[in-house]
Length: 195
Image (cartoon, rainbow, N blue to C red; front, side):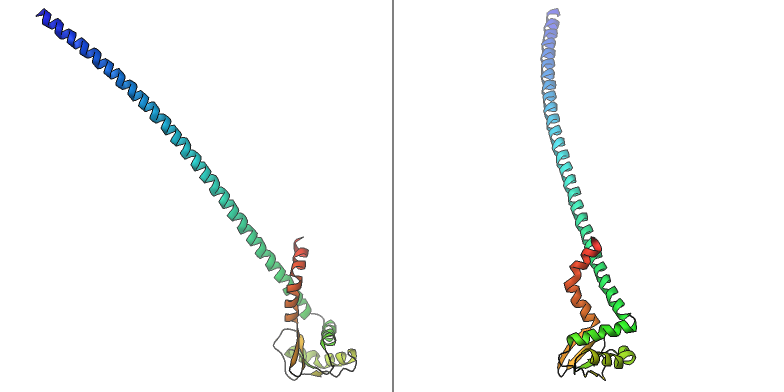
């Protein structure tokens, strides 16, 4: 029996040695696989972090561009508003001139715009009542051979006048004069305001 026990012990020892060798080989393969996947995972991690960082940088850059464009739009809108207010202020100043200055202003419009000196002068209701006759006298005196007529009709405008000769009208209203100046002078006004 001792011989059988020795054989069995020997078989067990061989089996254990083979099992230990297989286990050691399996552990080595597992370690190699683990190391390979850890390296792949690190590569994937670095790639994901790099792509995420680039996407974040791109997003920040895009947002900064959008914010910059929005700021420029706001500044442009503010500048346009300020230029418009400058012209509104000019219109209000013309319309609130002292009577003598306003009469000279209107007389100048008539003299520069008249052709025959017999045109009909259309004013707004308030100006027709307060300074119509005096304006006609001044215009007649300034324009050689002037015989202007104050129209019985009044216009629906804030200030200035319209000269009529038959079917021809020359619009010298303050509103139109300011609009014409806007197109011509907006860039100059903007330079003065924002330089």
